[in-house]
Image (cartoon, rainbow, N blue to C red; front, side, top):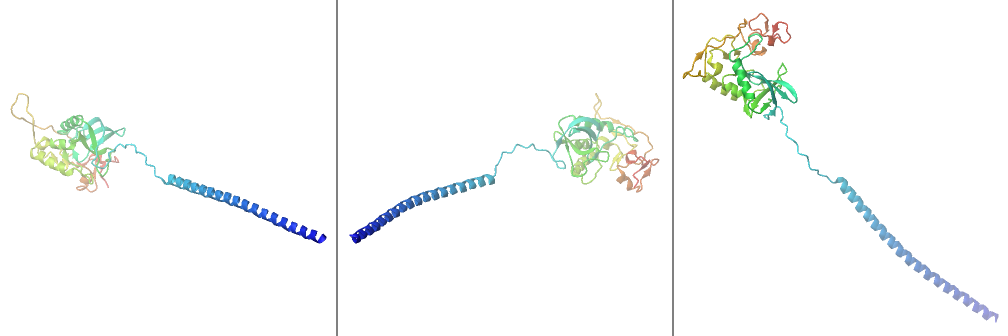
Amino acid sequence: MNVNFRKTLALFMIGSALIFSGCGTTLTSSENEKYESVTKDQASETNSNEIIKEDMVEDVKEEKTAVVVKPEAPVKAVPKEGTTDQVPVTLVSTTDGDTIRVMYKGINEPVRYLLIDTPETNHPRLGKQPFGTEAKERNRALVNSGNLTLEFDVGEKRDKYGRLLAYVYVDGKSVQEALIRDGLARVGYVYPPNTRHLTPYEEVQKVAKSKKLGFWAVEDYASDSGFASTPTASSESNSTDEGSSSATTTPSAPAATTGTTEWFDNCTHMRTKYPSGVASDHPAYQSKMDRDKDNFACEK
């Protein structure tokens, strides 16, 4: 009896152990399946998040590297100095045949015409020269007849007196050429490289000389070196008196007597004859060439 009981008890305990062992295995397997499912879902979600993050990073990179093109505001063209572009200015006054005053960049500036020379109207030594008044009045009429513009050359923009050096136009037409064509200006003060329009000016001057227009009608008055202080011939009027059918010949007005018998455009010209310059009592002395006011012009 005891033996059988012991056998039965042993078998019961072995069976119970097997049952409990099987149940434990089944529970663990179910939990593992759930765990693996959750883990896969989490991994999938993690991968999705990583992909989203990578896409966001790429979007940010694209935004940083993208070139934003903005419409540009229209830029007003500004004429360049030293070119054939013409700069609009406002006339202030007419000084003489080859000088005016204008408002340039908001400043009242004197302008000396490039490549021409006209007789003086109030020279400190020569006084009023023949055709000086005519040149001034013709210049005044021209610069007051339309829109005034300046053209600068590639060289110096100002002379030693601080005046602007320019080609002057009215409604796009050259004032210099008009004065030369009328025989009221000669080609002069030629300083390279400011020689852009030298050739056409010289061509116009040839025609005026051949027709003896303006001061070219006065023998030995105008030359390459300037205007003589005492013209030796009379000028022929290009106009007729009212009521007369023929041209009249009138003597030219004499230049003021100053004792000057030699005329030079500038110190460079003077030094071709007087390398060391001249004193104030010399016939060729001009105060404009005596920059230091020591009564000696064009000294080196």
